[in-house]
Length: 359
Ligand code: ADP
Image (cartoon, rainbow, N blue to C red; front, top):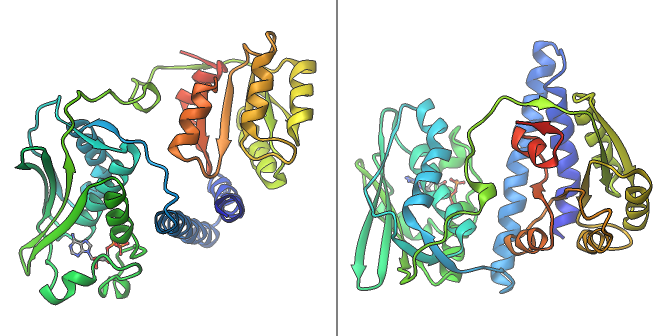
């Protein structure tokens, strides 16, 4: 279902994004912003509802591993920083030793902390403060606490907080949200063997916490692709890109996006078999490959490409609307050079991976 829901939405967001680059009048520009805002809100809702239903059906796939607490906390604080700056809110992450690790699914722990930190900013007062602290609660449990200086939550409302779609009156304010973040965060936390809770002081602020099991092993560092790399000046290189995708609207979007990179020639194939044939005939510099194709899966295409010595050298970027972390790891393990989730953003780093841009 996730693919069916996200594909049309990606078209809405992708084409609206393209319009922002056009010379539009003020009113039209504002209309496009409204489409983008509504579209992103809907995408958040779809993602969260799908995650909640996966949890309820017991079909959430998690990969538990030792995750470095400091690294995750800093990363999430960085993500929230622009929103905090806008509201003149200071975020302080407490000291914790670099080696401290908890047992968690890295992506999902990030998602939970991102929700808690962005709430702590959204529901704070201007010029407020958000503090992330760490408490050893018993021998092998660590509590990560996110404290804000907002208005706090009434004691009788506290038990409603984690109900789906409950916004406790925030729906009548201009603060954006779906009312699903906390319900989802608690579901995710419990699925990872962690627990979540809240304490609040009316007029002074709230503390949301997540408690996880400390790992005895040292945390592995984040995969290479997730680490920030210094931006270098780059130069575009002419080349051919083969896009294997059956969805017409995605192909049109790619055509328009690539029109801004005239050095890249786009080839298109609508299914796996013709994709492999085109790769053989034309020897593209890079292949962008959709995961869901009418005749075979993107992973099958990847295996066929890898079975051919001449094609194995071509970097393949997997594109999908609904990558789970497990799918992502599988694709990278089977040789994909990179993984892009729709609606996709072309970064300098991506072009470098494809070899169509040199450092
Ligand atoms: P959303 O923020 O999308 O509305 P959440 O599930 O994250 O949804 O939160 C549910 C509701 O709980 C929010 O709408 C808000 O009313 C309240 N809330 C969440 N975090 C805080 C906080 N730090 N301070 C005060 N109220 C909060």
